[in-house]
Image 1 (cartoon, helix red, strand yellow):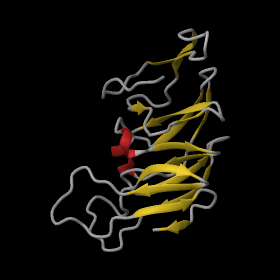
Image 2 (cartoon, one colour; image 1 turned 90 degrees about the vertical axis):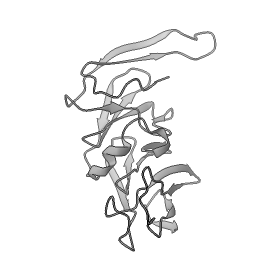
Image 3 (cartoon, rainbow, N blue to C red; image 1 turned 30 degrees about the vertical axis):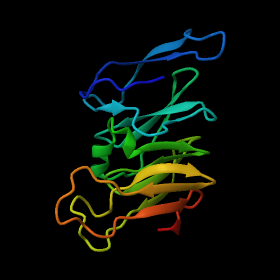
Length: 192
């Protein structure tokens, strides 16, 4: 179990895992100092589902860098990191706002989305980018970026469902906020 604690960047990050299997509850599996790659960056377990038991990993996200780091659930060892472009506005959703759905692991993919309005799918095996989708802004009325902010609601049946949400809406409210269903294999719209 992992909990967010605080809002300031921590330079020496300790991560630990406790066994929850019957008969072993509470036994320490590992306790490691995570070698955070960039000093002064806020790291978090940002997302509604930032882990995959099947791939034995959880995801740590760097707020300012918009990079994602996979760490092994069973050993605490680093596995991979992402290097695809994600918009700067994602930094506003790469923190403790769990409802923003920034990191969502489903099947073989890590899906990231957020305030910047770009949805990115990464391969959970190596962190390589598979596809990107831009939320668009057809009327040009959404003031905080070129694309509608999108959050991951859920994923099922090889599809991911995203919707727009707002933190500080300004009047008059912009028109056209989408709900979107994407094919997980291709990133193509199923419906919008």
